[in-house]
Length: 323
Ligand code: PEP
Ligand code: MG
Image 1 (tube, rainbow, N blue to C red):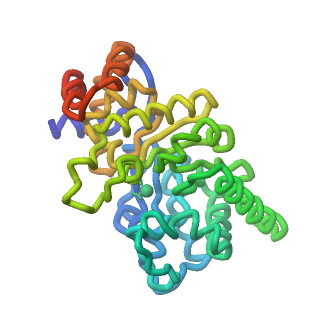
Image 2 (cartoon, protein in one colour; image 1 turned 180 degrees about the vertical axis):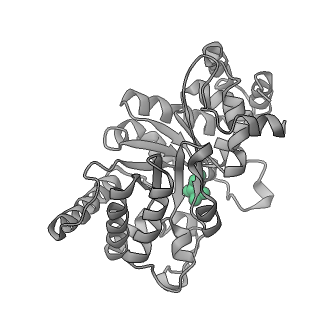
């Protein structure tokens, strides 16, 4: 199989019935930044900027961030690079950022909440991304959105950064798309509303599974619940894709579930537009997509979504396995 996966690396991800989807990679840490090559993928579907912050003793300044984002934009040769703004907190701590000890860090001060609370850090990052947007196809993505107000406030911060750059005569992409992570049940439930104010969605299944099933993604004792094949999770994904498409915006997936071969036909048949995976999974996911005929799967999707147990979901998925 390995040879077959490698053979399709340079091919586009097109289903048997002719649907072109994007297959991108997740990047962000120093090694993946170094190794990034746009040859085999449609771009970077998730650039985790927190690595940049975790590698330093203090917040990286605008110049340092700009240099990294610019280099990444240039290496992508016009393909998209989705830069996610700082997603710290939860399991990712930063000594210099005054994140308090909390009883429930995953339910506390994290991600967009920190950025909106510490506008200087947020503005610095947004200025760096905007400046780099003059050198490639950059998009901005906000993590952990749970209300429309958070998205609006984040947009306002982007406008503020743009106004500063304009006044300083610094080039940037005026039309840079602004998207959000869908990784909480709250954002799923209001995804019809959010879709009217965001330019794209990306489903973060790592957190979405955890928050939907109330299961700590690190706690071994309860790992049997932490499963993308939970009906609740699959229905959430389905709802998000439907609401995104009703509003005419694209939806990707950048959590681990995007690399889960069992789910590939289901995600395709639900209409997912973009898979963002670990670089090592690119060949396999492309191979599976190119073997899939989604026209034949409409009734099957409904059957999966009516399953009565995780086991039944898995059996139904196995009946359309592509590998
Ligand atoms: C996710 O939650 O699925 C995600 C991609 O973000 P992270 O794993 O960085 O929390
Ligand atoms: Mg997440």
